[in-house]
Each structure stands twice: as C-alpha cells, then as structure tokens.
Length: 261
Ligand code: MN
Figure 1 (cartoon, rainbow, N blue to C red):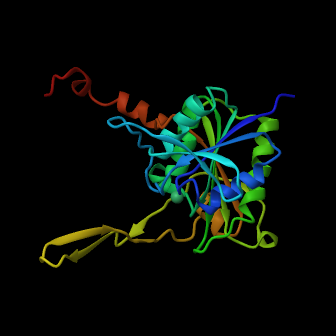
Figure 2 (figure 1 turned 135 degrees about the horizontal axis):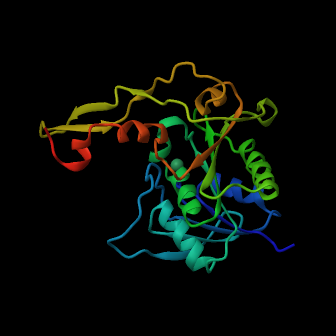
C-alpha cells in the first residue's frame, strides 16, 4: 500500500510542544510534513493573508527533524503545505495538538479547527486535535488518541466536506475516559470586556471573560470533556440552518421582491 502523505499544522507555532507530541504520535502512520506558523497564531480563526507576501522557510524541530514555518496564518499554512511543500499530493491533514480546548461556539475563533476546515475545503481528510483543561496541559494522553483517531479514519474514511474536531482532557492517560461522539455544545463567557485606563487617562479594553458553560449533556463536546471523556465531533462545511430556510421562504413576498408595503 502507498504510504499516506500527512500534513501537520497548528496555530500555536511550529515549535509548540503540541506539534512535537503530534508528530511523534503519528510517526509510522505515513509520511509526515510539518508546515505551521512561525509564531503563535491562536484565535486566528479562518483568516487568510491576501494583501502581503507569504514567506515559507525550513526549520528544525526539537527532535532534529525537518519542518516548514510560514509568516502566514494556520489556514495559509495549510494552503502552502498542500500546494508548495507537498506538491498537491496529500491524503490527510491533522491540526494540533492545540494547547487548550476548542469547544462549542469557540470553533470559528480557533486557528486549529479552522486550519482543519481549510484542509476539508482543499479536499483533504481533516482532523483537529486539542487538549482541554487548566495549564500546564499535558500531551501524553492526546498524542496516542490522535494516532488512534487517525488510524480509524484511515480505515473507515470520512464523507466529503466533513472534518473531525477532537478534544482530549488534559489528564494522566490512565484517567482518560473513552471517546464519545458528540455535537457542539454551548460556550458562553461572562465579563467579556475588561476596561482599563492607560497612563494618559484614555480607556482601553481587553477581550477576556470567563467561561460560564454550566452543566451540559454528555453528548455535547463541552459536557464530554467536563466528564473526563474524549470528545469527537463531526463538523461540516455547510453552515446552512436548513430548517430555517423553509421558514424564511414562507416570509411575505415583499422581502424577496422588493415591494415593501
Ligand atoms: Mn492555539
């Protein structure tokens, strides 16, 4: 069988511990190509760089292996990795292991998950992996879980336009629960904006806030990791609220036709 060509990226930067942990865990599953941002780009979301040049440079990871780093966002790294480094020949993309959870409504902020989404858009089988829990977070549980999910995906395949979002509690591997297949939960923050004053007396702001999720069902990503289980959520590129389409179509004609009464 042909060796799988696997693109690895993240949003914490090419030299983040989670990248090395991911690479070590996936060794032996295929030919690995690490292409990641040259500096931390967490919360970059799905941003792409359109109005300035993108740089791509070779670098060496802490284990002595070759990697590439880019001045761009995580999604830029997926495009560069796929088309430039891998010459358009890639089977799988794994993004992570992110230093922090990617749950509920946070997903579109996430450089980790949106890099996987970019991979799905490029037609790759894509998986995002994150570690959930208080810092400092450990990767010795998430690494083998990532390898297990990758092996399962290699066997079973995924439908087109679907990606997996994996969140692993930051626990001793012996304490880790099973994988639960989940849906997106809710993620709400309180006190999101912190106001301060600079030395000149002008107000400035920090986006901050603390999570107020409350208790959520075990079949949600938030509820599963809270219970010490590993969450795997299938996500899709189609963000259409399908049931609402019908409702909107039944709204009065004047909205569509422009003949407002
Ligand atoms: Mn991150």
